[in-house]
Length: 230
Image 1 (cartoon, rainbow, N blue to C red):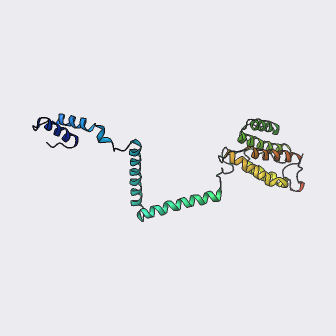
Image 2: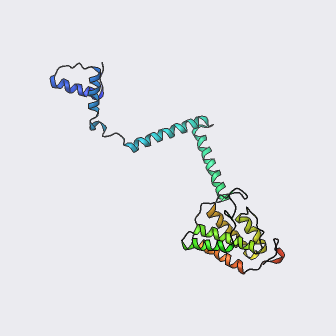
Image 3: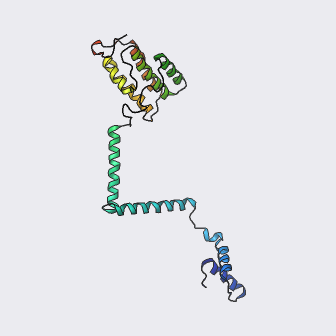
């Protein structure tokens, strides 16, 4: 039988001790090899757990790319070209469309997510959130106060499911001097509600100032299309 590695070293020491060849069976030989190989000297240069994990990852990645390149025209070069083309397309779409928004009219896209409340109720809620530094919620409630106030003044017809963008566009026709500010306020509302962005105090103050300014602004009668102004 042939014995290698640590077992050979163990047998060599046994021969050296008695200078007599030793015939050792399979099981004792395996045990002797295991004891010999458990010596820390044989593991000083072994990779640690992190290195072994990285090695396995790179092997997996290499196998993955190898399989993909084998199925892709042009091999590895063709795969690289496809990956770069997809990345460029994604970047172009992001640059063109900006922060993703929900399509108007989709479920959950309504400006008002709860039961009917007055503009005063929404303003009170906005002030409460602002005093606690919850700027996202403050912006949302103040934008709702703006739209509810316009509905109460009959400048907007109450309509379930209306979005902030739709409200801003409709109100801008009867309040043209504030049309740009209304669109900006609606965009801020969408950003914090659907776009995953975070509002700050200046953003809230802009919506608050718009709310105050709209309260003092009389509509343009020749462009008002929804009701009689209060």
